[in-house]
Image (cartoon, rainbow, N blue to C red; front, side, top):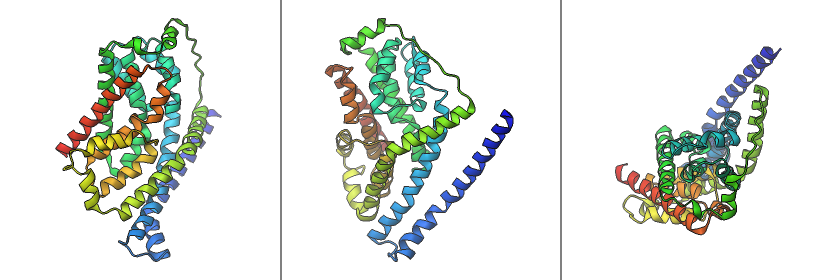
Length: 342
């Protein structure tokens, strides 16, 4: 009976994936038909190009997002927060930084979970530098950012973002660990190290994991769809109305100040990977330099003001300043490096 149910679910899944693919491949011709034939707008006009971009990218990103979140929701059922803490506990620096950054890609994380994750890591005895490698990698190098970058901009940019994001997370965590500044954690948090932590693991069937995938779609897509639409709307306006020469002049390679300016502008913004990737696509399409755009995206995701405010509950101001300085330096270095070599 179990094998029959598993076979049935597999067939349903494959059929659904086939339907998804057919619909996905029709998005471009439908967007052109909608903008240029149905609405009668001129191809190449500002409004026509903006509407075509919006009608094409909105279902495209939402379809990619739904598929990704469902699959990753199932994968994440194997990487619970408790299991992650147990895995990283006792790991030495360097090796622990690498493991923490890699685990950050697949582990559930958002700004609202920064404090409980940090508390759990401290209580499990995870070194401070290793903890920061995880906290940096989880929001910045998450699966949504990578798959959307791949779907919208290609595998080369996605791999570049993955490599540089992991390098920043690993290096920043290692540097913070070298400072020996555990005493800059709030006193009440340090007292948790002596507390005993009880972890209960639940055994999941494949049906349970499919349910986890559906729940992930409902929770994640339900929370970010508005940011996605807003990001695509901004991208559509940039795509249709902003001249390439203007964008190249303020975010191009020749503007040395563009990288730090992009970081400064990005930090106060509150968005996520799903909302910011369409904007990145439009900026690159209008001539903005890759390094500048990646620095902007990284600062929005990894150094967002809301996350900093939340972390203030467990970190003293000096440690927050060190965190911003180390991560910000890594982002600046990445921006200038890509502008120099690409």
